[in-house]
Length: 76
Image (cartoon, rainbow, N blue to C red; front, side, top):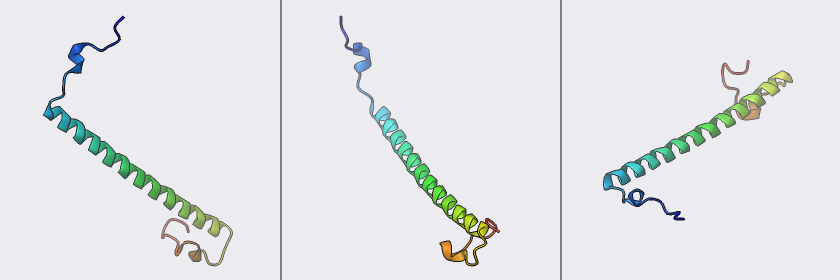
């Protein structure tokens, strides 16, 4: 009982196909890296906003010391 793939599927890829495969892989890697960076930025931004909101809810006198300053328009 043979388990090897058919001989036709073992053909070598052309240089054009290799270029397309490499280019696609690079683009996918760049997109994944950008999404990771944007996700990390959003998580940090949301954490800072949450800290500011908690500070304001507690009626603290100096919430600007918590993160440098409160972003305008976000936590009033």
